[in-house]
Length: 309
Image 1 (cartoon, rainbow, N blue to C red):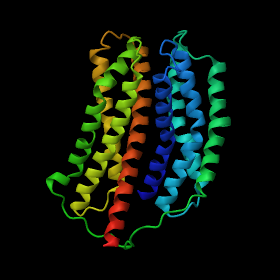
Image 2 (cartoon, rainbow, N blue to C red):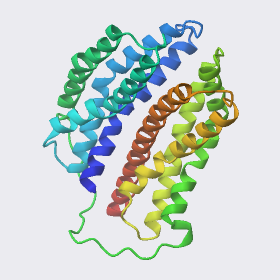
Image 3 (spheres, one colour):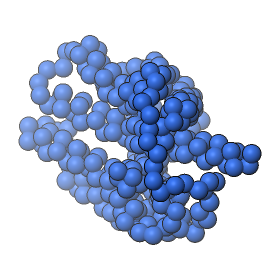
């Protein structure tokens, strides 16, 4: 399980590039460099920034892997998973969706030339940049653990009600979801109903605020768990951080049945479900990584303080 987490959390480093891409794109749109009236320019800028951020994703993923494993051994396989996992999921969904659209004879299908251009950009630009970033990360020093741990894990007692894992999981995503709910509605309305959206500053502010709330909630839940003498916080901090994606998924279903209730036919629902699935998976990985990293830093800090005392 720990090895799986070592793959999942650094894999969020790939989505960390998505976060940076979204932030930079929103900053450029807020400053007026990208007009919402020209959606092609906005999308092109986002794709190019995402590809260029691959090096940052490689640095973050391998650095996190090294801190968790206490060495940079086998960093190349970590980098390969980062370069292929989330983009592979996105391309798989996109390929199936594009094939379904093309099968119906719709003109909305992506041309073959554009499709292979995207694939070439992925393998010829994004993957090499990820490996360059991963190689640079191996030169970073590994921070020493503040305390020594025993090889035999202690028995975890029965948690009290306030430290119940299920309660912490479902509660951790409520505040981040409440923070982004209003802007999420306007953003989804703009995307799926064809409205123009000019208030990118509010999207940027709400996005940053959601990340801050997620960090605070993750640290609080980890503290409550440690107070209950439960040391198994790694996976739970990851899931609690990403739990906001569960609420977004539920809201997307509600949005489909209420606001988009006039959609008819299998293909429109498939398009909606495919793109929202990509968004929810990316949100889960990114917020899960944010939750885990914030909890990791918090535990490292309190253990160092205990050692100092």
